[in-house]
Image 1 (cartoon, each protein chain N blue to C red):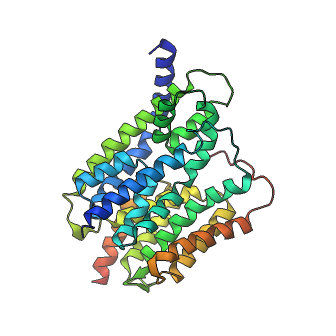
Image 2 (image 1 turned 30 degrees about the horizontal axis):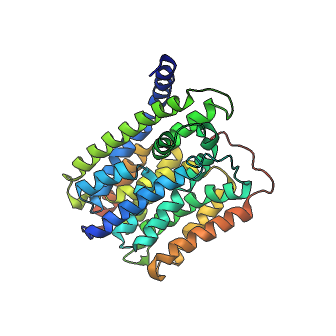
Image 3 (image 1 turned 135 degrees about the vertical axis):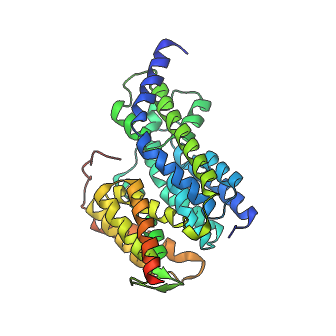
Length: 110
Length: 236
């Protein structure tokens, strides 16, 4: 399970640079630059697109194949989590409910 | 510190105390998810301190488990952190008069919640000489809460058996983070398009599918968006 050590440290170092420089890009030079509206839209749409592009394959693929079925516990857990996230807006309820649904779906699939 | 500085610092710290309900469970989940994804405790603590960006930390974990290449993980971290560029542009005029060391510190410590409080409370050019103390007070509360709750998760996570599949908690956490980002019709359509492309393209080499999905998602969002300046939604 453990990933290669050098890879994880390189990931941490690279992410630290990314996280710092996205925040510092205008603060550090003390710039008065105003983002054009289209640029601001791109910067707002991209994170939601990225999160969805990570979430969907993670819950809808089982062993690399598209699996929309009650037999796929991750899909069941993910859909329950989506419903809870929309209705409660609570991180805790989303994660607890999703994990519970995953566990129950596994028990029934077994 | 002078009295006005202490008072601004305390005002910021008290204001951000209202955000603790959100960040503490979130930090615990991130801590558990990092060790469940295979990071050692030292690596997980280093990531919390050096990166200090919860969304990016959680977003790379499913990719690390799927053995995605390093550059794909870094590109993903960059994309989910793009919102910080907006914050940086808004904050820059407030902090331009400060020494470089202050600007480095405030850049490192910027988080969503304190940015929203600060941008609602101060205007550029309002001449308030102590507002960076407000920002620092609020941010330090969030920094401490994030580190402590992450460490709880990191050390608790190591005791949880792998059969519980707690690494799935990072994906569930991303779902909780995604919903508040879906603030208008365009971003919803963009995200749906990105999810569809990611699914179709999952077999592409080097996880190019993820990057293609993001590009298509942004393009669909822009195509659906109404022309002209978007009206402010009152949230960040």
